[in-house]
Length: 128
Image (tube, one colour):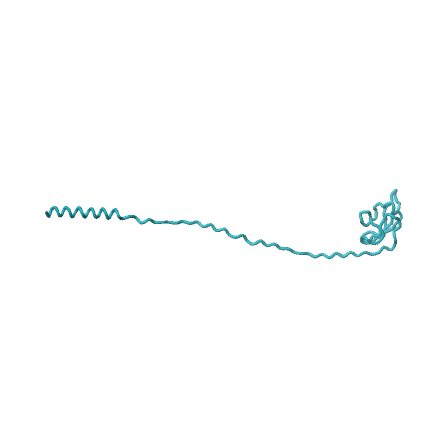
């Protein structure tokens, strides 16, 4: 019997080792990888505004003569002119005269005296 008992004891030992080996499991390892993308905030926009004040002074002086002729306007409506063109501008020496301004006198924008005279087959403003 002793031989039987020794055989039984060794078969139990190998059955226990096999059962213990079957119960051992590897421990799982979890690895988490994250990617973070950072977007920088835009820089503030700087807008500069500058206000400029301009003062314009117009001084009108009365003409010493009253222009004869019915085509022009009288007074000092534009600068220093007593007679102005249909567009409202002062006449200059060398420009043609209107029919109503023949023989009339006025001043240029700079104040020089001019007169509407007939010369070289045309009525023109000339310095007087």
